Length: 331
Image (cartoon, rainbow, N blue to C red; front, top):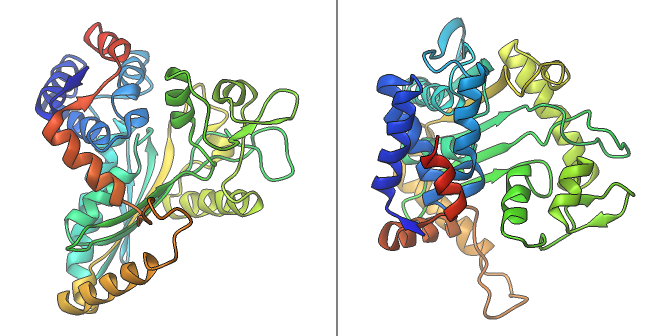
């Protein structure tokens, strides 16, 4: 079935009002709806029912918002008070944007928050406000380190965003070859992954998302490189926020009390708009000038396909799995 962006946002907001988010229901619902608008159902509507269930379990405190606890030069520390992760992240990115507009660079380090859902949401938020951004979060232990079998690190998402008049450039990546959300979505569709995404219980590389979910042996992005980057992000997130590390999060009953960082830079204070756009266009043009392996397949910059899906879904409606939608309406 297909649903308009407005209907989807309004329907989710109505549920969140009932769950205690009050005046923040619309803002939080829009984050979920925009993720599906952009084609990322795994962290949009497909994750919404779990979000509501975590409110009911007491993992997420719907009436809480982040509060500032410390100012350290251009870095502010905030405490998420176990509030709704998407709302906390959006508020903290807004603050990082404000700091960047005032000081060229601003950083908000958020502790004690919940899953922020699609990390790219906050990269797009910064880019649409004219800021460059780097943001990242740690997770529960859900990925083995390179050379290991048991999960002692996380597939800690990393987002880098660059504003550009011809199309914002936004990289949104987990440090596993495929995120768990993507594997759940692929399994729901009854499909295999396009490339091996991890190991089954017998230690064989596989494209079967269900087998990887069961074994919890997801494949690192770039093998040892993704493993090392995961460790460094966990360390940076913990040290900047003074919050919990992946190892400490793993001792909890649910994935909560995460540490997240939102770094923003105002490029116009660095180079001016004309020079910024000229450099961005030159870099993208050169990037896409490579000889193509497949003449019919274009070379896309990070975020280009998102622009295309967003436009198509605004015009034609957002495709949503019937079973997922029925489950949301039954909440």
